[in-house]
Length: 423
Image 1: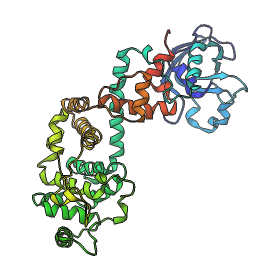
Image 2: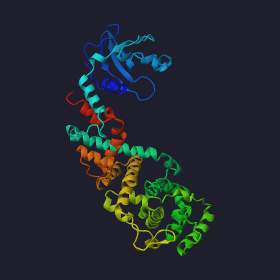
Image 3: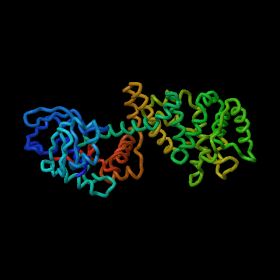
């Protein structure tokens, strides 16, 4: 028995209510178990309990052993002075700290639920309920997927809170920061974000119509215009950047932040910066257009970008390649940007603006995208879950990382269903 399971059993009344007694032998009737408190203080607030002939309303504290009252030092905490009942799994020492009674619940608990919980906790597979998912009705899965996706996006808002403040709560600037970070993908995400933070969007937008100036600002701020023998293209960028840097008093980020090692040339930061420059150059009111997208086919043309001609036979400055090809953003990269930036941005913007129709668009956008393929989604597929689109894969990533990985079956709708099956 652990405290989380004990609180779960109490919260859902998974015990025999008949014959409950305090240690003094007074009968106990639980009218309402209270509302679980996840902050400091007693475990359950606002409970209603009849003890003997008296109806009490107030807070309840739960412990595995009655001695935990002293071990947790509740006797010195004024928040516990007025509890109406102390519920314990087993009684080992008397608690003489106030007028509240103690009740032992061990013999009244539902042993079948406890057995199911132990079975799940003893499994070693990454997904504890693998092999049992077919026992959970589709309606529970469907509602749980919707909640998990919203939960994942709410976590994004917390992750973006600092950027949201630094943007002055400007959505266009926040989109600029997040798109930049997304163009860095995993390896150069932080460096790309630092680049965006060092270059205000208002300055970049002012020079958007001039591709060379746009590239000069981005490459210059990235600290990548430092060749000792620049070719004509890099020289032109350096000339533009030196003028613009002095004009706007810009300070570039350190060049050593960029990582090239073990990256495929198609993912080199130089090429990604050139593609990002083309996005800025070609995009008019990018935020408004992205916020209204409800199907991937509407946005793919906007992201169907290639780097400028210099990069047709370059991956780095001054290094000519044998092959000459236009360097387009691949479909996988587009997919990543839509899933990780555009859809959550739509959802968060709509929620804060109170626009429920736009929230629905963010879901439709994910449903129009293929499911992500990674280690976690493969685990779910092997467990018998159909991962049909990106909305489903994002929800399953949240389920795995937020619940399965920490064995949080008590907080999971699927785990709850399996534990209470037959109740």
